[in-house]
Length: 73
Image: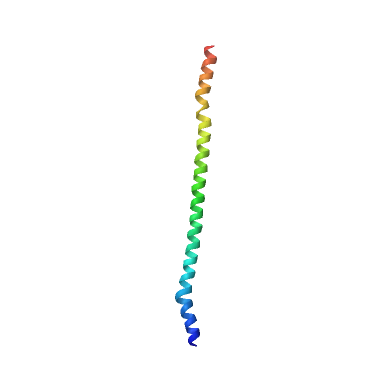
């Protein structure tokens, strides 16, 4: 009986909080992974936005210059 009491004491006071810590650490690791994944997605999205805006903005003056030169000639 005292052995079962000791095992019960260990399980309730040490192993149970330890398992909660393990669960908490797993959740933090998941959240951290998702956070870094979100940051990576945000960087990719910003890079894509920058590329498309540069594609749309940079050729515009070139097109205007080309059209003006065509109308002048």
